[in-house]
Length: 548
Image (cartoon, rainbow, N blue to C red; front, side, top):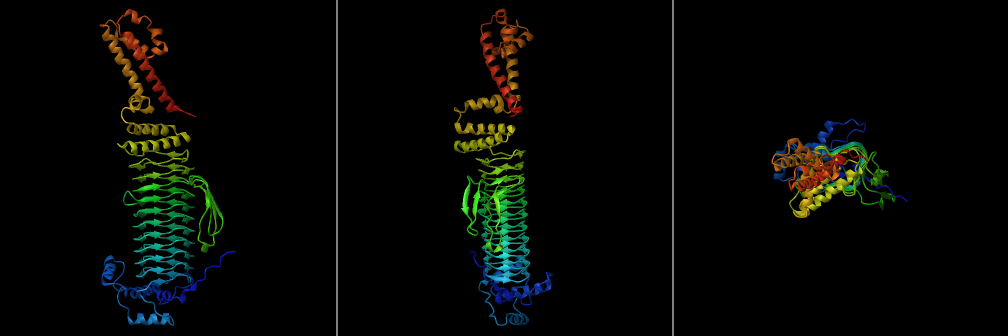
């Protein structure tokens, strides 16, 4: 048995709506009458301005938000128009909240540039046509929870000075919050954007909550600024191409960008994003099952993933008023770009799974190594030009850094990116040196000096050549020049392979021909060191050309 649809009152039975449309409603044919909208706005703003203090009026004029005419006193013709439009309804008090809750707005609603001095309550409202609050000013709370917007919707450059909520609201057609200004807490939790949505250059000064929000088409957060303590996208679903290019999260290091278990069902672009605090992209640690309270359906999920194609293993929460119940697997899909992203604090990708090309090229991890514990990366994951943090002086912090590099090393091993696996192993060992302290890390330090942690041929080869030449000089000088230069070089070269029988094979009588007492000891030591360097060269070759 389903719940009955909510009963809403017609807008023309609401005195606030009549006051907002004093000179008449917009035509039903979809052709906007901008002159009519301007006349309505002028009367509305004058009515609202009655509740403004002189300082507030001066502030709005200084900011250029409103003209002096719009915040001026009502004229006689204005009062006559209001009286005619309201008819039997009592004129609302400009000092009380604006109540549009459970109201059905017919056709098109144009409230561009309207001034709302008191809180607006439009909970569970139905906007049937094109709806625009572009350039509107909300000086107090703006409540649009559970409202349904059937047509194109615009809050372009709207200003929200107080708390604003669109909790469980549904937007059926393209929706724009581009360049909107949110000074208070903003809530879009469990909202559903069923067409394109834009928050391009929107500015959130306080916390913003998009948890479990579903974006069904192209989503634009380019150059958005989230400057509060938290920007929450926990378990949100992005079904279309999603772009966060050049966005900013947090104005300081304690802020928190939460993308845990978010599902990206197409390409996701985070190029040039600045995470000034923690950035959490964790996936779910294990399969979960829960009940969707709205539909009674079961939500089953594994770890949130970036995949190709993206899929999501969980039911999307969509407002019941939207009349839509869709199911998608809880996986993510499409190419993902973190090119030139700046992470100033924690970057946590625990249990995240990327199944399509993923780029971290040009990323800057300023203070901490990203955490990929339990994560799966795609074979086309790239790390070109990444800037890694310096190894800390604290043993505890260095140990945590070593663990993070170990996780990355394991991820690179899994996708057979051996070059990056070796690089992360080297970085892990550098951090281990600090964690273990000087004496315990001596073997690691020796390994670093002799072979640069096995990363290349150059260092062990140079050591081998230096040992060969130095010992040749010692052999010649120690014999009182009895040993010729070529003889010394040859014996030194043979001694490098002494453990392999080279000295016995080519210079079997050298030690008897030139009976210097310590030549034998010197040659033995050289043989051991030569074997070590040959081993390190072989290890470097294996690392360089390893194929599994």
